[in-house]
Length: 314
Image 1: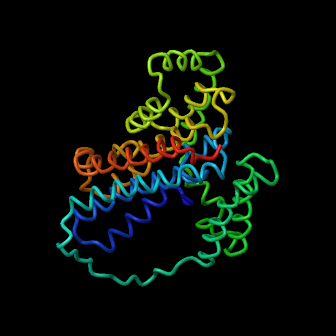
Image 2: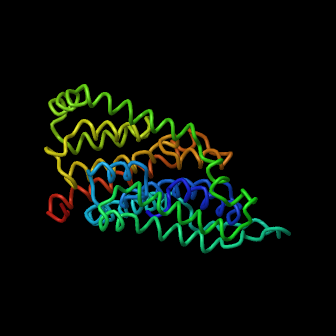
Image 3: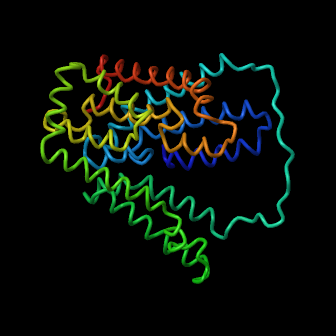
């Protein structure tokens, strides 16, 4: 919910590889980590790229987002873990791999300062936005600038490993261009009115907004959720569906957690696929997808129950 879900999966799967020797058990834990990281990213403005998009677009705001989606996200995790718990053999012990001491395994100087400074900076971006009325990206750039100053003071100028220059050299430029291209394409479709016309036809075909959002979650397991969310932002007007409308809550949850239904549905799942050599598309579909589907519907049920009982913030 605070760190990016891709980062969480990389760190936690690496940790599991050091702690758990049983390959099958470790792979199942890794699948649960993917579902948990995507569910955790649904209820904070900085936890998932799609949630951030909706936050920047004005479809959701900080406090209602936290209040409305934390319970469904927890239900998603409970449903997934509960399903896997019933399938696992709890009596079988697991072995830890033998620890190996590395000679030069010292952390870089100022690691804790940079980590906690960046973490606190990201958490306070919504507060900065609310107080200054500046766009959210300006808060993120301010945090990046402060971290640049800190790292330049901690390390030598010619050391590019921990400098801003070294970090920018490792940025996935093709991914950034992909996001930019998607937003340009969706903006063009919205400008000429195609997305509006599609929204009208979709509403006539599927009268329930809840069903539309649930289907969006299934679609995000196959198609990248960034263009899907960008399309919904163009399809549904804020005048008809204002900020923190029940539809936006459902879209936020479904887009973030629906990617867990298939291993290729989210960046976290793709990272897990690359880190665990024994994990394949078929293995994930057979072993993790049923648990992810159970958790997905648990969360949808939680959102609908909250809305029926009037327990959501607008």
